[in-house]
Length: 156
Image (cartoon, rainbow, N blue to C red; front, side):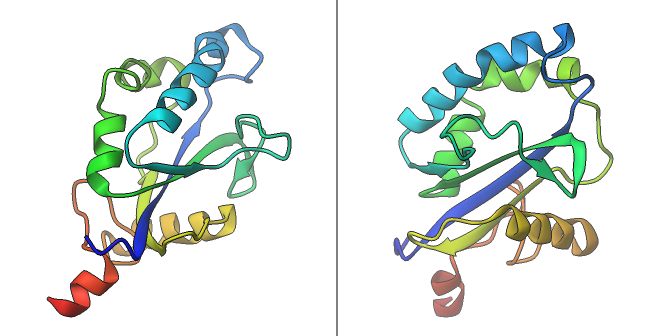
């Protein structure tokens, strides 16, 4: 890896109930801990927060008040994978159906950004739309079907 690029990721979820409901209590109650674990993970670069620096649970995606968004930037797919499937995040992942509806369309997209770039929600919406419409491409892909950094692809 050249280090000229970092890996941006977005994932969305459709809540089963409002954030202040009993259904969502454990999810909301665990956010600070799971986000702190992400920030302490090797390869973590950045995550989306709201204007107060808190979890971005008030931000919406595709204009839908029931969709919440998580965005972050990582040094590599390996770093993101280690966190997502690691012991700090896995229990959250395993309980996702308690809190969120199953969506038939893709809910997670990855793409390369120049190092130091922080993606916007609008950009993330566009990338997820690309993935949904075209499947994995260098512009939007998944952890399962990733693409090398742009410079590595050009050199290959």
